[in-house]
Length: 300
Length: 290
Image (cartoon, rainbow over all chains, first blue to last red; front, side):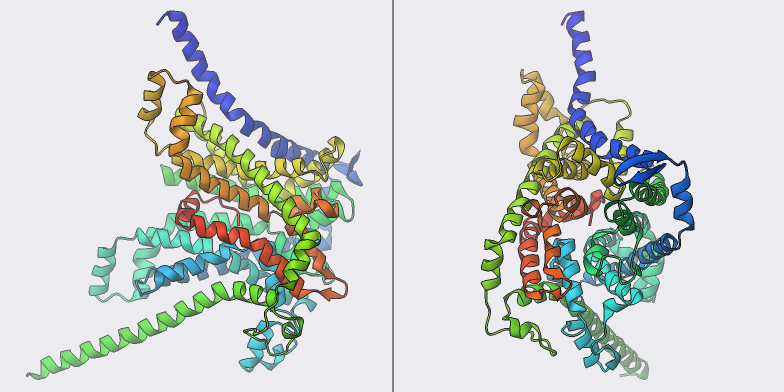
Protein backbone atom coordinates (compact mmCIF):
# COMPACT_ATOMS: atom_id res chain seq x y z
CA UNK A 1 0.00 0.00 0.00
CA UNK A 2 1.32 3.41 -0.90
CA UNK A 3 1.67 6.16 1.67
CA UNK A 4 -1.15 8.00 -0.06
CA UNK A 5 -3.52 5.03 0.16
CA UNK A 6 -2.75 4.58 3.84
CA UNK A 7 -3.47 8.21 4.64
CA UNK A 8 -6.66 8.09 2.60
CA UNK A 9 -7.78 5.02 4.52
CA UNK A 10 -7.00 6.74 7.79
CA UNK A 11 -9.03 9.75 6.71
CA UNK A 12 -11.93 7.47 5.76
CA UNK A 13 -11.85 5.81 9.14
CA UNK A 14 -12.22 9.20 10.74
CA UNK A 15 -15.03 10.47 8.54
CA UNK A 16 -17.21 7.39 8.00
CA UNK A 17 -18.40 7.02 11.61
CA UNK A 18 -19.51 10.66 11.69
CA UNK A 19 -21.41 10.16 8.43
CA UNK A 20 -23.11 7.15 9.97
CA UNK A 21 -23.95 9.11 13.12
CA UNK A 22 -25.19 12.13 11.15
CA UNK A 23 -28.85 11.14 10.61
CA UNK A 24 -29.29 10.35 14.32
CA UNK A 25 -27.53 13.48 15.50
CA UNK A 26 -29.29 15.79 13.05
CA UNK A 27 -32.78 14.51 13.83
CA UNK A 28 -32.20 14.67 17.59
CA UNK A 29 -30.76 18.18 17.23
CA UNK A 30 -33.78 19.31 15.17
CA UNK A 31 -36.55 17.66 17.16
CA UNK A 32 -35.12 17.90 20.67
CA UNK A 33 -32.10 20.23 20.72
CA UNK A 34 -33.49 23.21 18.82
CA UNK A 35 -36.95 23.21 20.48
CA UNK A 36 -35.31 22.87 23.87
CA UNK A 37 -33.26 26.05 23.31
CA UNK A 38 -36.36 27.77 21.91
CA UNK A 39 -38.37 26.81 25.00
CA UNK A 40 -35.76 28.46 27.20
CA UNK A 41 -35.77 31.57 24.96
CA UNK A 42 -39.59 31.71 24.96
CA UNK A 43 -39.69 31.46 28.73
CA UNK A 44 -37.95 34.84 28.90
CA UNK A 45 -40.62 36.48 26.75
CA UNK A 46 -44.22 37.46 26.99
CA UNK A 47 -46.40 34.85 25.32
CA UNK A 48 -48.69 36.27 22.69
CA UNK A 49 -50.66 33.27 21.61
CA UNK A 50 -47.91 30.92 20.61
CA UNK A 51 -45.83 33.79 19.24
CA UNK A 52 -42.82 35.27 20.97
CA UNK A 53 -43.83 38.57 22.56
CA UNK A 54 -41.79 41.25 24.28
CA UNK A 55 -38.72 40.41 26.35
CA UNK A 56 -39.72 40.15 30.01
CA UNK A 57 -36.61 38.63 31.54
CA UNK A 58 -37.46 36.51 34.54
CA UNK A 59 -41.02 37.82 34.97
CA UNK A 60 -42.58 34.51 33.91
CA UNK A 61 -40.47 32.66 36.46
CA UNK A 62 -41.36 35.13 39.22
CA UNK A 63 -45.05 34.87 38.38
CA UNK A 64 -44.76 31.09 38.29
CA UNK A 65 -43.09 30.84 41.69
CA UNK A 66 -45.60 33.17 43.35
CA UNK A 67 -48.73 31.74 41.67
CA UNK A 68 -50.82 29.66 44.07
CA UNK A 69 -52.12 27.25 41.42
CA UNK A 70 -48.60 26.54 40.18
CA UNK A 71 -47.30 25.99 43.71
CA UNK A 72 -50.14 23.56 44.34
CA UNK A 73 -49.42 21.78 41.05
CA UNK A 74 -45.73 21.48 41.97
CA UNK A 75 -46.49 19.98 45.39
CA UNK A 76 -49.03 17.63 43.77
CA UNK A 77 -46.49 16.52 41.15
CA UNK A 78 -43.90 15.76 43.83
CA UNK A 79 -46.47 13.90 45.96
CA UNK A 80 -47.79 11.88 43.02
CA UNK A 81 -44.22 11.04 42.00
CA UNK A 82 -43.32 9.93 45.53
CA UNK A 83 -46.44 7.81 45.97
CA UNK A 84 -46.27 6.12 42.56
CA UNK A 85 -42.51 5.48 42.71
CA UNK A 86 -42.53 4.06 46.24
CA UNK A 87 -45.79 2.17 45.65
CA UNK A 88 -44.63 0.56 42.42
CA UNK A 89 -41.13 -0.24 43.76
CA UNK A 90 -42.48 -1.96 46.88
CA UNK A 91 -45.18 -3.84 44.98
CA UNK A 92 -42.70 -4.87 42.27
CA UNK A 93 -40.24 -6.14 44.90
CA UNK A 94 -42.92 -8.26 46.58
CA UNK A 95 -44.01 -9.64 43.21
CA UNK A 96 -40.40 -10.36 42.18
CA UNK A 97 -39.87 -12.24 45.47
CA UNK A 98 -42.99 -14.34 44.84
CA UNK A 99 -41.91 -15.01 41.24
CA UNK A 100 -38.50 -16.10 42.55
CA UNK A 101 -39.94 -18.37 45.25
CA UNK A 102 -39.67 -21.55 43.19
CA UNK A 103 -43.34 -22.42 43.70
CA UNK A 104 -44.91 -24.34 40.81
CA UNK A 105 -46.59 -22.16 38.19
CA UNK A 106 -44.23 -19.20 38.59
CA UNK A 107 -43.25 -19.28 34.89
CA UNK A 108 -46.90 -18.77 33.97
CA UNK A 109 -47.32 -16.06 36.60
CA UNK A 110 -44.29 -14.21 35.19
CA UNK A 111 -46.03 -14.04 31.81
CA UNK A 112 -49.22 -12.76 33.47
CA UNK A 113 -47.29 -10.12 35.42
CA UNK A 114 -45.69 -8.83 32.20
CA UNK A 115 -49.10 -8.48 30.54
CA UNK A 116 -50.01 -4.96 31.80
CA UNK A 117 -46.84 -3.74 30.08
CA UNK A 118 -48.60 -4.43 26.79
CA UNK A 119 -51.59 -2.26 27.66
CA UNK A 120 -51.34 1.16 25.97
CA UNK A 121 -51.30 3.91 28.62
CA UNK A 122 -54.42 5.65 27.32
CA UNK A 123 -56.39 2.38 27.15
CA UNK A 124 -55.37 1.50 30.70
CA UNK A 125 -56.24 4.96 31.98
CA UNK A 126 -59.75 4.79 30.53
CA UNK A 127 -60.18 1.26 31.84
CA UNK A 128 -59.30 2.30 35.42
CA UNK A 129 -61.67 5.23 35.12
CA UNK A 130 -64.41 2.76 34.19
CA UNK A 131 -63.49 0.43 37.06
CA UNK A 132 -63.76 3.34 39.51
CA UNK A 133 -67.06 4.60 38.04
CA UNK A 134 -69.32 5.77 40.86
CA UNK A 135 -72.44 3.75 39.98
CA UNK A 136 -71.38 0.88 37.73
CA UNK A 137 -67.71 0.56 38.64
CA UNK A 138 -66.41 -2.83 39.70
CA UNK A 139 -64.24 -1.32 42.48
CA UNK A 140 -67.11 0.35 44.35
CA UNK A 141 -69.08 -2.88 44.09
CA UNK A 142 -66.15 -4.86 45.51
CA UNK A 143 -65.53 -2.41 48.36
CA UNK A 144 -69.22 -2.37 49.31
CA UNK A 145 -69.31 -6.16 49.12
CA UNK A 146 -66.55 -6.20 51.77
CA UNK A 147 -68.83 -4.13 53.97
CA UNK A 148 -67.36 -0.69 53.27
CA UNK A 149 -70.76 0.88 52.69
CA UNK A 150 -69.36 4.38 52.28
CA UNK A 151 -68.09 3.34 48.83
CA UNK A 152 -71.58 2.50 47.58
CA UNK A 153 -71.92 5.05 44.76
CA UNK A 154 -68.75 6.88 45.89
CA UNK A 155 -67.72 9.53 43.33
CA UNK A 156 -63.95 9.08 43.08
CA UNK A 157 -63.59 11.88 40.56
CA UNK A 158 -65.61 14.43 42.52
CA UNK A 159 -62.66 15.52 44.66
CA UNK A 160 -59.03 16.09 43.81
CA UNK A 161 -57.54 13.82 46.46
CA UNK A 162 -59.65 10.76 45.68
CA UNK A 163 -59.19 11.32 41.93
CA UNK A 164 -55.43 11.38 42.46
CA UNK A 165 -55.69 8.11 44.41
CA UNK A 166 -57.28 6.48 41.35
CA UNK A 167 -54.66 8.01 39.05
CA UNK A 168 -51.90 6.72 41.36
CA UNK A 169 -53.41 3.21 41.30
CA UNK A 170 -53.50 3.30 37.49
CA UNK A 171 -49.89 4.53 37.24
CA UNK A 172 -48.60 1.99 39.76
CA UNK A 173 -50.38 -0.85 37.92
CA UNK A 174 -48.75 0.26 34.66
CA UNK A 175 -45.25 0.58 36.20
CA UNK A 176 -45.09 -2.76 38.01
CA UNK A 177 -44.29 -5.13 35.09
CA UNK A 178 -41.05 -3.45 34.00
CA UNK A 179 -39.85 -3.00 37.59
CA UNK A 180 -40.81 -6.54 38.66
CA UNK A 181 -39.07 -8.16 35.68
CA UNK A 182 -35.90 -6.11 36.21
CA UNK A 183 -35.91 -6.94 39.96
CA UNK A 184 -36.51 -10.62 39.22
CA UNK A 185 -33.41 -10.62 37.02
CA UNK A 186 -31.46 -9.02 39.90
CA UNK A 187 -32.83 -11.56 42.40
CA UNK A 188 -31.70 -14.42 40.17
CA UNK A 189 -28.14 -13.11 40.44
CA UNK A 190 -28.17 -13.60 44.24
CA UNK A 191 -25.96 -16.66 44.92
CA UNK A 192 -28.27 -19.50 46.00
CA UNK A 193 -25.76 -21.26 48.28
CA UNK A 194 -25.33 -18.17 50.47
CA UNK A 195 -29.10 -17.91 50.95
CA UNK A 196 -29.21 -21.65 51.69
CA UNK A 197 -26.43 -21.36 54.28
CA UNK A 198 -28.10 -18.43 56.01
CA UNK A 199 -31.39 -20.31 56.18
CA UNK A 200 -29.66 -23.36 57.70
CA UNK A 201 -28.14 -21.05 60.32
CA UNK A 202 -31.69 -20.10 61.29
CA UNK A 203 -32.04 -16.73 59.54
CA UNK A 204 -35.64 -15.81 58.78
CA UNK A 205 -36.81 -15.07 55.24
CA UNK A 206 -37.02 -11.39 56.17
CA UNK A 207 -33.45 -11.30 57.48
CA UNK A 208 -32.22 -13.01 54.33
CA UNK A 209 -34.01 -10.37 52.24
CA UNK A 210 -32.63 -7.50 54.29
CA UNK A 211 -29.07 -8.75 54.79
CA UNK A 212 -28.32 -10.73 51.63
CA UNK A 213 -30.76 -10.18 48.77
CA UNK A 214 -31.25 -6.39 48.96
CA UNK A 215 -27.53 -5.59 49.24
CA UNK A 216 -26.86 -7.68 46.11
CA UNK A 217 -29.75 -5.99 44.28
CA UNK A 218 -28.74 -2.49 45.40
CA UNK A 219 -27.16 -1.22 42.14
CA UNK A 220 -30.17 -2.35 40.08
CA UNK A 221 -32.62 -0.94 42.61
CA UNK A 222 -30.92 2.46 42.61
CA UNK A 223 -31.03 2.72 38.83
CA UNK A 224 -34.68 1.57 38.72
CA UNK A 225 -35.56 4.09 41.41
CA UNK A 226 -34.02 6.98 39.48
CA UNK A 227 -35.59 5.91 36.18
CA UNK A 228 -39.00 5.50 37.79
CA UNK A 229 -38.68 8.95 39.36
CA UNK A 230 -37.82 10.56 36.03
CA UNK A 231 -40.78 8.91 34.31
CA UNK A 232 -43.23 9.60 37.13
CA UNK A 233 -42.32 13.28 37.28
CA UNK A 234 -43.25 13.75 33.62
CA UNK A 235 -46.47 11.72 33.78
CA UNK A 236 -49.09 13.36 31.60
CA UNK A 237 -51.33 10.81 29.88
CA UNK A 238 -53.10 9.41 32.95
CA UNK A 239 -54.13 12.78 34.38
CA UNK A 240 -55.11 14.11 30.96
CA UNK A 241 -57.31 11.11 30.18
CA UNK A 242 -58.77 10.31 33.60
CA UNK A 243 -59.76 13.67 35.09
CA UNK A 244 -62.69 15.70 33.73
CA UNK A 245 -61.96 18.35 32.60
CA UNK A 246 -58.22 17.56 32.46
CA UNK A 247 -56.86 18.78 35.81
CA UNK A 248 -60.34 19.08 37.29
CA UNK A 249 -62.53 19.29 39.21
CA UNK A 250 -61.64 22.93 39.86
CA UNK A 251 -57.86 22.65 39.18
CA UNK A 252 -57.59 20.09 42.01
CA UNK A 253 -55.66 17.47 39.98
CA UNK A 254 -53.42 19.75 37.94
CA UNK A 255 -49.80 18.60 37.79
CA UNK A 256 -46.85 20.40 36.19
CA UNK A 257 -46.94 18.64 32.82
CA UNK A 258 -50.67 19.27 32.43
CA UNK A 259 -50.39 22.88 33.55
CA UNK A 260 -47.63 23.40 30.95
CA UNK A 261 -49.87 22.01 28.24
CA UNK A 262 -52.89 24.05 29.33
CA UNK A 263 -50.91 27.32 29.60
CA UNK A 264 -49.55 26.91 26.08
CA UNK A 265 -52.45 25.37 24.18
CA UNK A 266 -55.57 26.33 26.13
CA UNK A 267 -54.69 29.70 27.72
CA UNK A 268 -52.33 30.45 24.79
CA UNK A 269 -49.54 31.85 26.94
CA UNK A 270 -46.46 30.17 25.48
CA UNK A 271 -44.14 32.27 27.64
CA UNK A 272 -45.62 30.94 30.88
CA UNK A 273 -45.94 27.44 29.41
CA UNK A 274 -42.24 27.49 28.52
CA UNK A 275 -41.27 28.68 32.00
CA UNK A 276 -43.21 25.73 33.46
CA UNK A 277 -41.52 23.37 31.01
CA UNK A 278 -38.13 24.68 32.17
CA UNK A 279 -39.12 24.01 35.78
CA UNK A 280 -39.86 20.38 34.90
CA UNK A 281 -36.57 20.25 33.02
CA UNK A 282 -34.62 21.68 35.97
CA UNK A 283 -35.96 19.03 38.35
CA UNK A 284 -35.31 16.24 35.85
CA UNK A 285 -31.83 17.57 35.08
CA UNK A 286 -30.86 17.16 38.73
CA UNK A 287 -32.25 13.63 38.84
CA UNK A 288 -30.59 12.74 35.51
CA UNK A 289 -27.22 14.11 36.65
CA UNK A 290 -27.54 11.87 39.70
CA UNK A 291 -28.33 8.92 37.41
CA UNK A 292 -25.34 9.51 35.13
CA UNK A 293 -23.07 9.73 38.17
CA UNK A 294 -24.44 6.52 39.63
CA UNK A 295 -24.08 4.78 36.24
CA UNK A 296 -20.45 5.85 36.08
CA UNK A 297 -19.81 4.51 39.58
CA UNK A 298 -21.41 1.18 38.64
CA UNK A 299 -19.27 0.71 35.54
CA UNK A 300 -16.08 1.67 37.32
CA UNK B 1 -37.30 -44.54 71.04
CA UNK B 2 -35.86 -41.89 73.37
CA UNK B 3 -37.68 -38.75 74.46
CA UNK B 4 -35.16 -36.57 72.69
CA UNK B 5 -35.87 -38.33 69.43
CA UNK B 6 -39.63 -37.90 69.61
CA UNK B 7 -39.26 -34.26 70.61
CA UNK B 8 -37.04 -33.66 67.60
CA UNK B 9 -39.67 -35.39 65.52
CA UNK B 10 -42.41 -33.10 66.79
CA UNK B 11 -40.24 -30.09 66.19
CA UNK B 12 -39.64 -31.12 62.62
CA UNK B 13 -43.34 -31.74 62.09
CA UNK B 14 -44.18 -28.27 63.45
CA UNK B 15 -41.56 -26.77 61.16
CA UNK B 16 -42.99 -28.69 58.23
CA UNK B 17 -46.51 -27.48 59.06
CA UNK B 18 -45.26 -23.92 59.37
CA UNK B 19 -43.61 -24.17 55.98
CA UNK B 20 -46.80 -25.61 54.44
CA UNK B 21 -48.83 -22.71 55.82
CA UNK B 22 -46.24 -20.31 54.46
CA UNK B 23 -46.39 -21.91 51.04
CA UNK B 24 -50.18 -21.81 51.11
CA UNK B 25 -50.13 -18.09 51.90
CA UNK B 26 -47.57 -17.50 49.18
CA UNK B 27 -49.78 -19.38 46.72
CA UNK B 28 -52.73 -17.20 47.69
CA UNK B 29 -50.65 -14.05 47.14
CA UNK B 30 -49.54 -15.43 43.76
CA UNK B 31 -53.15 -15.97 42.71
CA UNK B 32 -53.95 -12.40 43.79
CA UNK B 33 -51.06 -11.03 41.74
CA UNK B 34 -52.22 -12.98 38.70
CA UNK B 35 -55.78 -11.69 39.09
CA UNK B 36 -54.77 -8.03 39.41
CA UNK B 37 -52.56 -8.40 36.32
CA UNK B 38 -55.12 -10.10 34.13
CA UNK B 39 -58.53 -8.93 35.32
CA UNK B 40 -58.33 -5.45 33.73
CA UNK B 41 -57.76 -7.04 30.30
CA UNK B 42 -60.66 -9.42 30.84
CA UNK B 43 -62.90 -6.60 32.01
CA UNK B 44 -62.01 -4.40 29.04
CA UNK B 45 -62.71 -7.12 26.48
CA UNK B 46 -65.82 -8.34 28.29
CA UNK B 47 -67.29 -4.82 28.46
CA UNK B 48 -66.64 -4.39 24.73
CA UNK B 49 -68.73 -7.47 23.81
CA UNK B 50 -71.51 -7.15 26.43
CA UNK B 51 -74.92 -5.90 25.33
CA UNK B 52 -75.57 -2.38 26.64
CA UNK B 53 -78.10 -3.61 29.23
CA UNK B 54 -75.46 -5.80 30.92
CA UNK B 55 -72.82 -3.07 31.12
CA UNK B 56 -74.89 -0.83 33.37
CA UNK B 57 -75.78 -3.12 36.23
CA UNK B 58 -75.27 -2.25 39.89
CA UNK B 59 -73.96 -5.75 40.55
CA UNK B 60 -71.32 -6.29 37.85
CA UNK B 61 -71.82 -9.29 35.56
CA UNK B 62 -68.59 -11.23 35.21
CA UNK B 63 -69.71 -13.24 32.21
CA UNK B 64 -72.00 -12.70 29.27
CA UNK B 65 -74.17 -15.26 27.49
CA UNK B 66 -75.13 -12.77 24.84
CA UNK B 67 -71.86 -11.49 23.31
CA UNK B 68 -72.04 -8.98 20.49
CA UNK B 69 -69.43 -7.78 18.02
CA UNK B 70 -71.67 -4.99 16.72
CA UNK B 71 -69.58 -2.26 18.40
CA UNK B 72 -66.49 -3.46 16.54
CA UNK B 73 -68.18 -3.34 13.13
CA UNK B 74 -69.75 0.06 13.84
CA UNK B 75 -66.50 1.60 15.11
CA UNK B 76 -64.23 0.17 12.43
CA UNK B 77 -66.57 1.43 9.71
CA UNK B 78 -66.62 4.88 11.30
CA UNK B 79 -63.89 7.34 12.20
CA UNK B 80 -61.97 4.78 14.27
CA UNK B 81 -61.20 2.71 11.16
CA UNK B 82 -59.42 5.71 9.66
CA UNK B 83 -57.68 6.46 12.99
CA UNK B 84 -56.37 2.89 13.24
CA UNK B 85 -54.88 3.41 9.79
CA UNK B 86 -53.37 6.77 10.86
CA UNK B 87 -51.79 5.18 13.92
CA UNK B 88 -50.41 2.34 11.82
CA UNK B 89 -48.91 4.71 9.21
CA UNK B 90 -47.31 6.95 11.83
CA UNK B 91 -45.98 4.05 13.91
CA UNK B 92 -44.66 2.16 10.88
CA UNK B 93 -42.98 5.30 9.51
CA UNK B 94 -41.35 6.15 12.83
CA UNK B 95 -40.24 2.53 13.31
CA UNK B 96 -38.56 2.32 9.90
CA UNK B 97 -36.77 5.67 10.36
CA UNK B 98 -35.68 4.96 13.93
CA UNK B 99 -34.35 1.49 13.12
CA UNK B 100 -32.49 2.53 9.94
CA UNK B 101 -30.85 5.54 11.60
CA UNK B 102 -30.27 3.58 14.79
CA UNK B 103 -28.53 0.81 12.88
CA UNK B 104 -26.10 3.20 11.18
CA UNK B 105 -25.32 5.00 14.42
CA UNK B 106 -24.94 1.74 16.36
CA UNK B 107 -22.60 0.42 13.67
CA UNK B 108 -20.49 3.56 13.97
CA UNK B 109 -20.38 3.33 17.76
CA UNK B 110 -19.49 -0.37 17.86
CA UNK B 111 -17.05 -0.70 14.91
CA UNK B 112 -15.10 2.55 14.66
CA UNK B 113 -12.64 4.27 16.93
CA UNK B 114 -14.37 7.57 17.63
CA UNK B 115 -13.31 10.30 19.97
CA UNK B 116 -15.75 10.89 22.83
CA UNK B 117 -17.60 7.66 22.05
CA UNK B 118 -18.84 7.06 25.56
CA UNK B 119 -19.85 10.70 25.89
CA UNK B 120 -22.03 10.35 22.79
CA UNK B 121 -23.61 7.17 24.11
CA UNK B 122 -24.42 8.74 27.48
CA UNK B 123 -25.65 11.94 25.79
CA UNK B 124 -28.13 9.80 23.83
CA UNK B 125 -29.52 8.36 27.05
CA UNK B 126 -29.77 11.79 28.64
CA UNK B 127 -31.66 13.09 25.60
CA UNK B 128 -34.03 10.16 25.98
CA UNK B 129 -34.94 11.47 29.43
CA UNK B 130 -36.06 14.90 28.24
CA UNK B 131 -39.85 14.96 28.54
CA UNK B 132 -41.86 15.75 25.41
CA UNK B 133 -43.57 18.59 27.30
CA UNK B 134 -40.27 20.54 27.19
CA UNK B 135 -40.12 20.55 23.39
CA UNK B 136 -43.77 20.51 22.33
CA UNK B 137 -44.41 24.30 22.26
CA UNK B 138 -41.61 25.42 19.88
CA UNK B 139 -42.07 22.28 17.81
CA UNK B 140 -45.73 23.19 17.33
CA UNK B 141 -44.89 26.74 16.15
CA UNK B 142 -42.09 25.46 13.90
CA UNK B 143 -44.42 22.86 12.39
CA UNK B 144 -47.08 25.50 11.78
CA UNK B 145 -44.55 27.68 9.99
CA UNK B 146 -43.34 24.93 7.64
CA UNK B 147 -46.74 23.27 7.18
CA UNK B 148 -46.09 20.05 9.06
CA UNK B 149 -49.21 20.28 11.26
CA UNK B 150 -51.82 17.63 10.43
CA UNK B 151 -49.33 15.67 8.36
CA UNK B 152 -48.01 12.16 8.92
CA UNK B 153 -44.46 13.38 8.26
CA UNK B 154 -44.53 15.82 11.17
CA UNK B 155 -45.49 13.21 13.76
CA UNK B 156 -43.24 10.56 12.20
CA UNK B 157 -40.24 12.90 12.55
CA UNK B 158 -41.08 13.65 16.19
CA UNK B 159 -41.69 10.00 17.11
CA UNK B 160 -38.50 8.93 15.34
CA UNK B 161 -36.50 11.25 17.57
CA UNK B 162 -38.29 9.86 20.67
CA UNK B 163 -37.48 6.26 19.79
CA UNK B 164 -34.03 6.81 18.31
CA UNK B 165 -31.83 6.79 21.40
CA UNK B 166 -33.21 3.49 22.67
CA UNK B 167 -32.93 2.05 19.17
CA UNK B 168 -29.22 2.95 19.02
CA UNK B 169 -28.57 1.47 22.47
CA UNK B 170 -30.40 -1.78 21.80
CA UNK B 171 -28.79 -2.44 18.41
CA UNK B 172 -25.37 -1.42 19.72
CA UNK B 173 -25.78 -3.98 22.49
CA UNK B 174 -26.45 -6.73 19.96
CA UNK B 175 -23.65 -5.58 17.62
CA UNK B 176 -21.06 -5.71 20.38
CA UNK B 177 -21.95 -9.39 20.77
CA UNK B 178 -20.91 -10.10 17.17
CA UNK B 179 -17.15 -10.75 16.82
CA UNK B 180 -15.37 -8.07 14.78
CA UNK B 181 -13.36 -10.83 13.04
CA UNK B 182 -16.42 -11.52 10.91
CA UNK B 183 -16.73 -8.11 9.29
CA UNK B 184 -12.93 -7.70 9.13
CA UNK B 185 -12.77 -10.98 7.19
CA UNK B 186 -15.36 -9.61 4.77
CA UNK B 187 -13.38 -6.38 4.37
CA UNK B 188 -10.17 -8.34 3.67
CA UNK B 189 -12.08 -10.38 1.07
CA UNK B 190 -12.81 -7.15 -0.80
CA UNK B 191 -16.26 -6.17 0.47
CA UNK B 192 -16.77 -2.52 1.26
CA UNK B 193 -18.12 -1.29 4.60
CA UNK B 194 -21.64 -1.03 3.31
CA UNK B 195 -21.62 -4.59 2.00
CA UNK B 196 -20.17 -5.82 5.29
CA UNK B 197 -22.98 -4.08 7.15
CA UNK B 198 -25.78 -5.35 4.92
CA UNK B 199 -24.62 -8.91 4.27
CA UNK B 200 -22.66 -9.86 7.40
CA UNK B 201 -23.66 -7.70 10.36
CA UNK B 202 -27.32 -7.07 9.67
CA UNK B 203 -28.41 -10.72 9.42
CA UNK B 204 -26.58 -11.54 12.66
CA UNK B 205 -28.04 -8.55 14.49
CA UNK B 206 -31.56 -9.31 13.29
CA UNK B 207 -32.95 -10.18 16.75
CA UNK B 208 -31.69 -6.85 18.10
CA UNK B 209 -33.10 -4.99 15.13
CA UNK B 210 -36.46 -6.74 15.62
CA UNK B 211 -36.60 -5.86 19.32
CA UNK B 212 -35.73 -2.22 18.73
CA UNK B 213 -38.29 -2.09 15.90
CA UNK B 214 -41.01 -3.33 18.22
CA UNK B 215 -40.03 -0.92 20.99
CA UNK B 216 -40.07 1.95 18.48
CA UNK B 217 -43.46 0.86 17.18
CA UNK B 218 -44.92 0.71 20.69
CA UNK B 219 -43.44 4.11 21.61
CA UNK B 220 -45.13 5.72 18.64
CA UNK B 221 -48.37 3.73 18.88
CA UNK B 222 -48.73 4.80 22.55
CA UNK B 223 -47.70 8.43 22.29
CA UNK B 224 -50.45 10.91 23.18
CA UNK B 225 -49.04 14.40 23.80
CA UNK B 226 -47.21 15.11 20.52
CA UNK B 227 -49.68 13.22 18.36
CA UNK B 228 -52.73 15.06 19.69
CA UNK B 229 -50.95 18.43 19.50
CA UNK B 230 -49.77 18.04 15.92
CA UNK B 231 -52.78 16.15 14.54
CA UNK B 232 -55.93 18.07 15.40
CA UNK B 233 -57.92 17.41 12.26
CA UNK B 234 -60.46 14.63 12.92
CA UNK B 235 -59.39 12.57 9.90
CA UNK B 236 -55.71 12.75 10.89
CA UNK B 237 -56.02 11.79 14.57
CA UNK B 238 -54.23 8.72 15.91
CA UNK B 239 -55.80 6.36 18.43
CA UNK B 240 -54.60 7.85 21.75
CA UNK B 241 -56.09 11.21 20.84
CA UNK B 242 -59.19 9.68 19.30
CA UNK B 243 -60.07 7.75 22.47
CA UNK B 244 -61.00 11.06 24.08
CA UNK B 245 -63.98 11.49 21.78
CA UNK B 246 -66.09 8.95 23.67
CA UNK B 247 -66.26 11.26 26.67
CA UNK B 248 -68.53 14.27 26.44
CA UNK B 249 -70.35 16.56 28.84
CA UNK B 250 -73.14 13.99 29.08
CA UNK B 251 -70.85 11.21 30.25
CA UNK B 252 -68.92 8.42 28.64
CA UNK B 253 -69.94 5.75 26.13
CA UNK B 254 -68.28 2.93 28.08
CA UNK B 255 -69.07 0.15 25.61
CA UNK B 256 -67.61 2.18 22.74
CA UNK B 257 -64.59 3.29 24.76
CA UNK B 258 -63.74 -0.25 25.82
CA UNK B 259 -64.13 -1.47 22.23
CA UNK B 260 -61.82 1.25 20.90
CA UNK B 261 -59.35 0.55 23.74
CA UNK B 262 -59.32 -3.15 22.86
CA UNK B 263 -58.70 -2.35 19.18
CA UNK B 264 -55.92 -0.02 20.32
CA UNK B 265 -54.33 -2.52 22.73
CA UNK B 266 -54.50 -5.62 20.52
CA UNK B 267 -51.46 -5.01 18.24
CA UNK B 268 -49.24 -4.23 21.24
CA UNK B 269 -50.41 -7.34 23.08
CA UNK B 270 -49.61 -9.49 20.04
CA UNK B 271 -46.15 -7.91 19.80
CA UNK B 272 -45.50 -8.62 23.46
CA UNK B 273 -46.30 -12.28 23.05
CA UNK B 274 -43.86 -12.34 20.12
CA UNK B 275 -40.98 -10.65 21.96
CA UNK B 276 -41.51 -11.81 25.55
CA UNK B 277 -38.16 -13.60 25.48
CA UNK B 278 -36.30 -10.39 24.65
CA UNK B 279 -38.09 -8.21 27.21
CA UNK B 280 -35.38 -8.77 29.79
CA UNK B 281 -32.72 -7.39 27.44
CA UNK B 282 -34.91 -4.33 26.96
CA UNK B 283 -35.21 -4.05 30.71
CA UNK B 284 -31.44 -4.32 30.95
CA UNK B 285 -31.00 -1.30 28.74
CA UNK B 286 -33.27 0.31 31.26
CA UNK B 287 -34.51 3.18 29.17
CA UNK B 288 -37.85 1.80 28.10
CA UNK B 289 -40.48 4.46 28.33
CA UNK B 290 -43.53 3.17 30.08
